[in-house]
Length: 376
Image 1 (cartoon, helix red, strand yellow):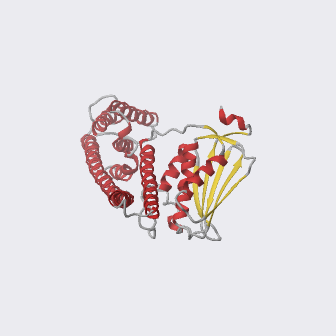
Image 2 (spheres, helix red, strand yellow):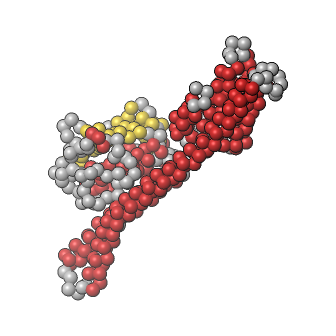
Image 3 (cartoon, rainbow, N blue to C red):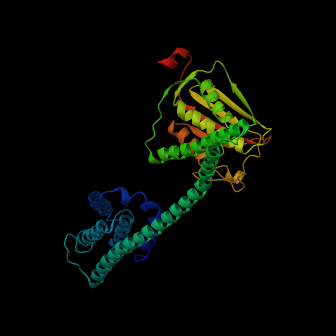
């Protein structure tokens, strides 16, 4: 029991604990904490030494060393092992308050304790190295997968509009005399649509880069929610959509102090997602509701909705549904989540009972019913 239990305890606790211990504590503090922990347990054992047999105290000290092995690097653990052996010998092994060991049995017990404590530290160090290598391999695999996903998405989403622009401009330049006014108008329209699509993908990549960097800060100002929604709707309608967009905003809704640009991009991305996955004859509703100092924006559509198993995954970066249409980078909804959380809000998704998806954005913000504050 004395030999194996601490090592088993160490192995069971190692994986979940090391993520927030050794990497976050300086080596100097590790030395200090390991010494303090051993001393603290030793003082407690000494206070109850009349009730606890000294061999049991050895077990408690060995468990303490195992805990330090889980928490700290190898050198502080070796220090804790040596210190605990010396303390056990000096204070607990008869005769007390001397390093002399009274019996041969106690001598071998002390020697075994010392060896087990050192082996414990060495094994912990090796396990941690193996764990680190495994984590690095896993992170590398995830990075490669993410990189391939991004390249596959961008190869379509960026090359397609660029090819359209190059083809249309080439026709305008080489066949200018042969083209009718209608032909020129159609080519210009193709260039315009391709440019909008290209700009949208570049914006998504830039926005995701800002979110990943962690430096994004909302620029809060008094905002008219109706104007923000109408601006987003105007942008989406410029893409030539056919769905019916219905806006429902109470005229008396107050001004909210938040980032207009972020909110408009959130609404635009939600509308763009709804447009892509709903029939052209369907209806998309956009609502803004005021709950005390919380703005709630709801976007509902009449599409097929989302599989229940994937509702919590759709906001992940580069995540696309298994039955998604070709193209797309899977960044739109992750940007929605990132911008919403950057403003201190939350986003949720649920399927409507009547069919379709319902996105709910809730952002806490200061409110004011004085419209002139918007221009302050």
